[in-house]
Length: 279
Image (tube, rainbow, N blue to C red):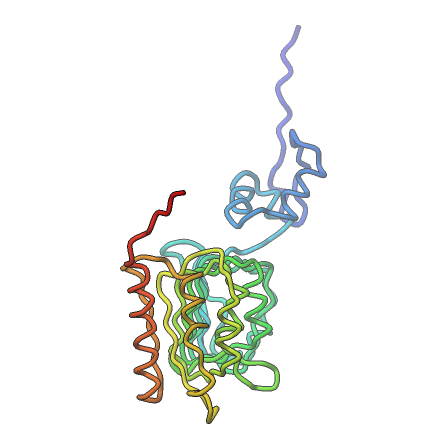
């Protein structure tokens, strides 16, 4: 029997637009489902590493760190790699229509009034705002997968509604059930209703660092404020450990004395020895 050598294939004619036909060991509907609904960004990247066919069918750029600033924004696909996704001269982030997957960290710096570019998915664990006004609808989209572990609303920053009113941090917590660090140092107005709502929130995780800057426009805030609401929230959601940091900063000195006592009272409560009662 004569030997028939395998036929050589000219791979040069295949491109991402016209890829070579693939023969997978799994049925095509399963392959398509894996590509259309990846369980995580790592799973999608594994598919890309397995075969170029997947990238030709769905070209998603996974950014482990996205940094939006006024004049030049960039994203990192891996440690040490930097890709510019926004250049000076463009004034609206919404002009970008890349299929981006924000993963791990997103930062905003000196961003006012611009809406986010369209993106494929967002599974960030950290969000940082500095001198930034972020639209509430953008925050909801970014937090939709409920993976955020750290939120830092820095100086001169806010998350705002369409009517330009500021969103209170209490109203953000239901979108972040896995949060462990929350730092809101921006000027925020608080009401009795905000603290009452706070007392009803139950997180999946336990807070290790919780800081709020509190001020109130209400003239009767001192009369309506109930410290038990704040204590209830801490008892339900703060990690009962000496290393847990709880800090409140009030714009009024007489309120500051009250808010200084709350972390002390909570810490005193977790130091009490457990009492075992037997029948």
